[in-house]
Length: 262
Image (cartoon, rainbow, N blue to C red; front, side, top):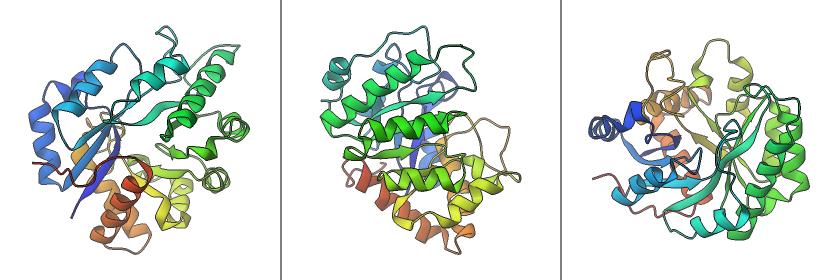
């Protein structure tokens, strides 16, 4: 059995400082591959270094919508970095009106559009972060033609109506530990309804540890709990859900499936 953690931040100090243990825990829990996701250009070299040092770790390049006082990526810069074969996605990018207190969010929207343009030009999928901004997020994705590059709605926390709009654009839906939370009934409904060929699972480590580890430091090994929960919701075995989500990951991202954890 192989499970892919489709979104984690193992370059963050909480995990990177104990990386051998984190990777060992992942192997022991059948986590075969991980996608380490970029949040800014300043720390990106460490993300890429991890991907080059480990066959089973892939990387993305992008600037998170909540990082305001950081280097702004140009389309040209994103395209140049994305030439590296270990870069399998552009992002994470999107809109976050919850954590950013700013009367004018045009800077977020313009950054988002540049990421979409880069993804379209290099033909690599987008990793989308959206919070309290679902209408603008979906509108911009459609207006900018994001269906040509597709992508994933990471750490999905919206309702079925938003999920349907994303699915119509060819996007995948990724479930984090949030889906295991008792009050996450809306997300659980989406996890039941989502087409099998569009489901991914993730940790968003070091954040959002799933039940029964909620509140603790998260790491890729724990995506097994999320996968088991989604499998139970859909009346599947863990092995079946693992096979589905692993195939989905390699269908979406231009990565080499034959590379497995040593």
